[in-house]
Image (cartoon, rainbow, N blue to C red; front, side, top):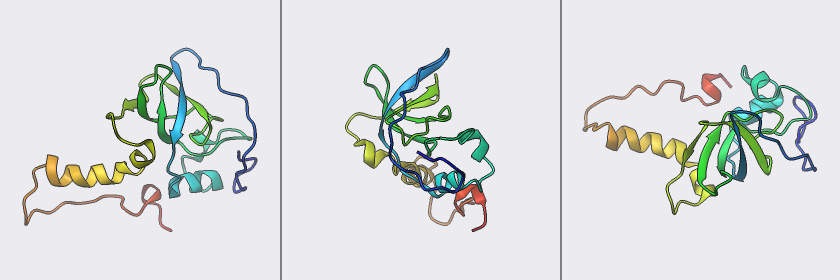
Length: 145
């Protein structure tokens, strides 16, 4: 849990979220803490107010978890203060996608970059000699470091 922008998150008890109309509870299984998560927690990212709207707050805005029926999903759009590093978080209906059977949740958290690269090579049908523009590959949504 984070008690101030730029503070050090620490483990502590926090009440479970309650889903409102149009929301669903996610049982979090795995989260990759990325540079953007660190910048949001530090209060230096432009989207920080969206994900850390109040303190105390639980950092991280996306991850892998299970719906109430057990379906494994990738999720985003968490409702503050229940970030993805919580045991349970709450997201709007539709802010998740099913994960194929047999993929470990921890492995899936790092697949976004790998899937993008694979899609450019395989699904897009690129052939040797073609060029791809990768826009915003600096990390943290193109923010200079």
